[in-house]
Amino acid sequence: MKRKTTLKLATALIASSLIAMPIASAYAQPDGPKGQRMSEHGDFKDCQFGGKHHGPGKHGKHGKWGMRDHDRTRSTPLSVDEARTLIDSMLIRSNAENIKISDVTASEDGEKINVVVANKAGDVVEVVKFDAKNGRLERGDRWSLRKLMPRPDKKARLERAFDDAQMKTLAQAMVIRFGQGDLKLGEISQTKRGTYLATVTNSKGDIVREMELSRVTGRPIS
Image 1 (spheres, rainbow, N blue to C red):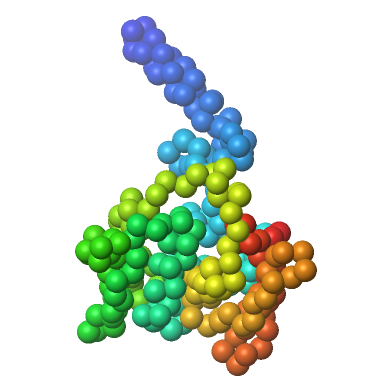
Image 2: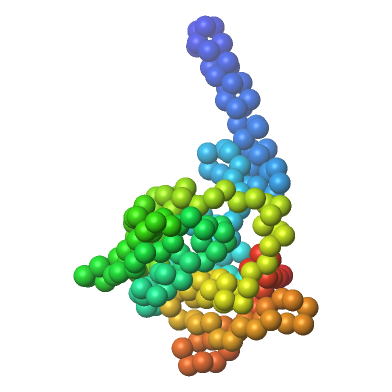
């Protein structure tokens, strides 16, 4: 083999080893900054429960709450009332007072649910669509709706408290989202220490889970 060819091969091997070493090191340490994990492209992304790129985790395929992955097809299609509740919960959480739900209708084939959003004057500002089969907003519609809502103030958000009606809506939305049509919200009541206790039931009315919810965040207290 000629000397020039040998030098080229040696240079290529050294360069490839220099590139491979940091990549191998990164994969050997899956946890990145702030508990992030490395993606297949070499960058770190936040780990979120229920993400399509993540496995079942320590709580199994049904998650921490015993509810199905929200990416799956629902056991029963999303209803008009359920779609209204999901949007209402988003408006409550964002404290959006400048927009409201004007109308909610199902398409003729029942595969889509259209939610008409209007401003205070009643003028239509957006129409978002749910896929009734999986109960999720169409691609891009969630972002379009978010743009209409006020930007959350983290400090103010921790100072407010939801009332009974708002807590019921938030709890219902949570069950709709993760229950996939086979779970329902049972009773919900305020406890002596100011939290809320909600029961989740199956179609027969049997309690399958109890959740204690914060009246400040509207989310389960772990």
